[in-house]
Amino acid sequence: MLVILMEDQILAPGKVCQSCLLADRSGQPRWSQGQLRCGYQVSKLTAQQPEQYECMMGFRIANIE
View 1 (cartoon, rainbow, N blue to C red):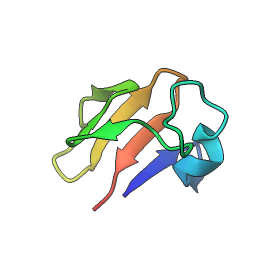
View 2 (cartoon, rainbow, N blue to C red):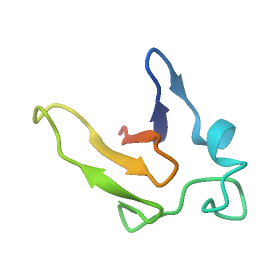
View 3 (cartoon, helix red, strand yellow):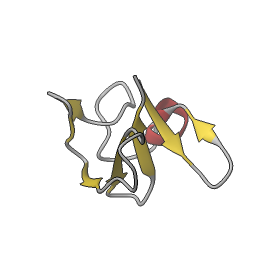
View 4 (spheres, rainbow, N blue to C red):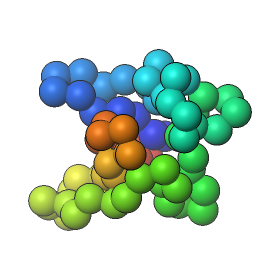
């Protein structure tokens, strides 16, 4: 499940990505084959952290399973 990480909040991508021009038709991030297509992967600080990405709009997105 993808979530958007803010300073002190975790948001559903639909609340943020709906207005993004890079989102898919349903207002979700372009997630395909385990990769965020509208951003790039950010290196983990620890092995226990989920995979994190930074989208083109500057938001941090985490893949939480």
